[in-house]
Length: 448
Image 1: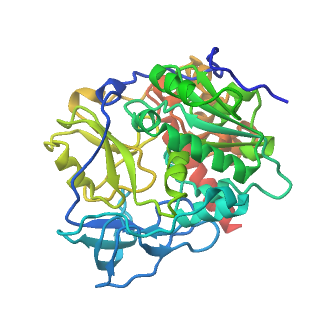
Image 2 (image 1 turned 180 degrees about the horizontal axis):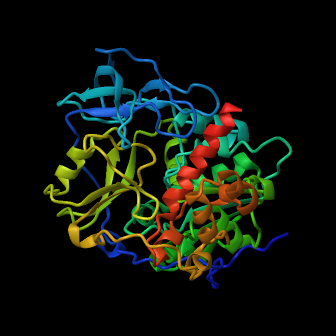
Image 3 (image 1 turned 45 degrees about the vertical axis):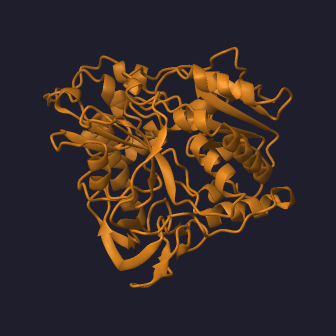
C-alpha cells in the first residue's frame, strides 16, 4: 500500500518548470463581495458533458438559488438562479470563445435582499454515499479548479474500481491565481467537512490535502484544524508547475502513475480541487445550489486586484469596471497564463470553471517573437512532466503525421500544461500544435 506524504517533507515529481508566480498582487487580500450587476447571463454549458435544459420561461420571477435549468442526463448538472429577479431571455449568448450557446438572462430586482431562500437543509449523519453523490449533482457542482468536470461523475468510479485514496488539490500552481489559497485560509472548516463527505461517498480509506510549500499560512492553518489521528492528512508539496495536475500529484504523493489513457480511479485514486470540496461542505448541508464562486481578479491592467465572491453569470465587463479596468490592457484571460483562455468578448459571463481573471498590461506580455526551427536542444524534453518528446511531436505535427503522434509518441497523454512552449528558445507554439493535432484526430475518429 503506498504511503502518503507527511507535512514534514515536501514531495514533488520530476521535470516541470518554475515560472514567475506574481501571486503577491492578491495572496494577502481577503475575499470580498462585489456589487450586484444590472443583469446576469447564465450559460447552460458551464461544464464538460451535456448542457443543462432551461425549466423557466421569459418573464418568470425567480428567487436566488432556485432551479432554473435541469441536468440533461448523468454527465450534466443543473443551474440555479444567481439572483432574485425576473427572466428576461431564454435564448443564446456568447461564451468566452465567441460561440453562441444556450443561456438564460436574468434581471435582479433592485429592492431584493438577495438572500438565498431556496434549499432544504439535510441531516448529514443519515446520508448514504449514494445520497451524497445525488446531492452533489443536485447542487450543480463541478470541479472549480478550471476543468469544470461534473463532480458527481468523478465520485462515481466505473464498476469494479475501488477508490482507496482521495487527494484534495490545494496546490494552485498557476501564476497569478490565489483564490484557492484564500479559500483555504477562510473556509477551512467547510473544506474538512466537504472532504469527509466526499471520502464517505467514495468509500476511500484515506484523504490527503496537498498544499504547495509557498503557502505556509495555509499549511499552518490545516495543521491546526486537522486533529491527531484524523483520516485526513496534510501534505506539503514542492512549489513547481504543474504540481497541481492529477498525474503529478499522484506521482508525488503516492509514487504511482496513472496509466496512459487511464483515469486516477484506475489506480484507486480520486483527485478533487480544494474549492470544490469547500463548496460541498458549505452547500450540501443547506441543500442549496452553486450560484457563486471565489475568483481571483488580478494583473497590472486593473487598479484593485483581489479575490472576489462573484455570482455566476456576472458579465465580465461589469466585473472589470468594479475593479478599476481602464481599457488599456493588452490581454484578458479566464484562468492563469499557462493554461487559461484568452477572452474574445468582454461581455461574456463568469462561469463555474473560472477560478481567475488575469488582466495583463503591456509590460506583462513579452513582445511578439519570431518562430525559429527546432534546434534539438532538449529543453522541452527536460521540462515535460509526462516525459513525452515535445520536439518530436512538434515535428510530426508540422508534417501532418497525426496518427503517428498518437500511436508512437503518446500525444493523448499530453494535458497541454504549456511547460514545453514556456522553455522553447525557438518560440515554437508546441501546445497549439498539439491541441490542433488532437482535434484533427478526434474529428477523423468520428467519421470512421
